Amino acid sequence: MPGQQHDPSSGSDDPAPTSSPTPDPTPAPLRLRTPTDLLAALPYLVDRPLDDAVVALVLRQDSVLGVLYGGLDHLDHVLTPDRSGRAAVDAALAEDGSALLVAGFGHSARVTPHVRALLSEARARGLPVLEALRVTGDRFWSYLCHDPGCCPAEGRRFDADASPVPAGAVVRGLVPLGRTPSTRTGFLLEPAHGPARAEAAEAVAAEEAAPHEEAGHVERRTAEVLEALAEEALRRVTDPAVLARLGVHLTRVRVRDAVWTRITPESARIHVRLWSRLVRHLPDRLLPAPAALLAVAAWQHDDLDLARAAVDVALEAEPGYAMAVLMARALKVGLPADRWRGFLAARVTDGDGGEPDPERAHEPRRPSGWLRLAQPPTPAPCVITFHRGGRRDAAARPVGRNVPLPWCCAPRSAPPPDRGCRGGRHDQRCHAPRISNRPRCQTAATGFATG
Image (cartoon, rainbow, N blue to C red; front, side):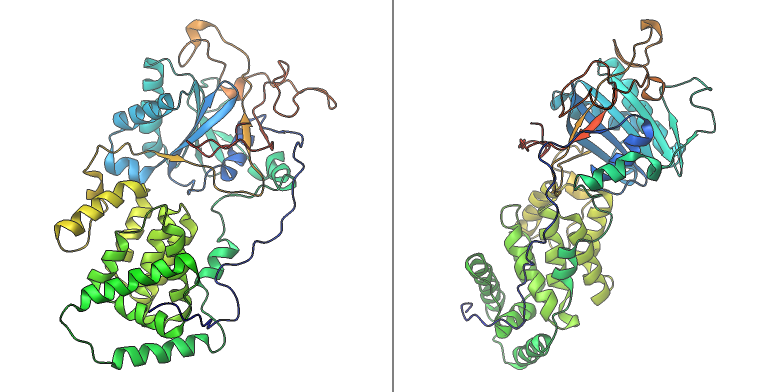
C-alpha cells in the first residue's frame, strides 16, 4: 500500500535546521552572583512552567547533576508534603548529589509545606541545602535566612531583566526553554498550502464513499496503518490517497489505540513525522486522532511544546475528544511518559475497554511526584558551577553540617576583571555560582554537559 511517493506539498515536512550563531567553545563563564541571578537563569534550565512549581538543582561539588521539577498540582495530587520531601531527597541522593538549591514558585500556602518537608528531610539525611527560596510575583523569600536586614518579612524585590544573566545567555547562544513555540512546532502543525489539502480532501471523500467489508476491517486497517509507519521509517509517505486512508482508518478507536500503544521513545520520531503530515493535509474533521497521536509521540520524545500544541489542535477540531483530554491532563500534572506507557499497553491488551485514566497510570508503582529533567537541546551546552560562600557557626547552620550561609547572606567577592573564575576552573576567591559554555560531555542520566 504505501510506496508511491507523491509529495502533495511544496516543501519538506521536516524543516531544515536554521542557522544560529556558534558560540565560542570556551567563552568566559556566566556567573550567578545573587538569588536574582539564579531566578533569571532558571528559565534557561527548566522547560516546564515555573508557575506553581518547586525546582531543585542537584549539585555535586561544583557541578549540577540534574534538575528536579515538581508541579504543585501534581505534588498535591499524588503526594503528601512529607512524602514529596522524601521523594526529592531520595532522587537527589540517587544521583549522588552532595547539595541542593531549591526555588518554589507560587503562594506560600502551597509552596511552603513541600519546601519545609524537603528541608527537614535533607537535614535528617545530611544533605546540605545551600539556599531555598519562594517566589511570588517580583519578590522572593528565603527559607534559610532569618535576618530582617537581609530578608524582610515582606520579601525582597527582584528584577530578572536587570540581572546580567539574560544578556550573557543571549551572547552565548542560550535561549529560554519552553517560553515560545519553536519554529519547528509551528511548521509541523501549520496547514499545508496550495492544492495539497484539496487533493487530500478529495482522496478522503473517495475513501469514505468506497464500500468496506465489515468482517475483519479493524485488523486490516490496523495492518495498513502499521505498514505505513514501517514505510515512513524508510522514506516519507506522501501519497494523498494513502494519507486519506490513514486518516479514515484512525477514526476507528481500536485502530487508533493499536497505534497508540506502539509509540515508544525509540519510535516517537517516526510517529511525529507521519502524524504531523496527516495533521497538515487532512480536513479538520479527521484531525483529532492524528493530532492526539502526534501529542503522544511528542510527549514520548520529550517535546512538550509540540505535545501541548498538538493537543490544542485535536481539541479545537473536536472539543472533548477523549484521548486529547487525557493527554492534556497528563501534561498538566507532569505525568512521566514511561509510567503511562506500560499501563496503557496492559489495559488495551487486557481488553479493559474505554479510555485509560492518567491518574490510574500511577498504580503500577508508587509515584515520586518529581520529574528528573534532562537538558533540552540548546544552541550551546550549559554547565552550572556553584562555588560556596562563607560559613556560619555550627550551631546556627540551617541544614546539614558545614553548610554555607544562605546564599543571600554569603559574601560575594568578585575577582579582578582579568583574573579569577575562567572556563569552569575553581577560584577560591570567587563564591559565585556560574553558568559557562564548554565542550559537551553528555551524561546518559541527565543530559547535562559536565565536561
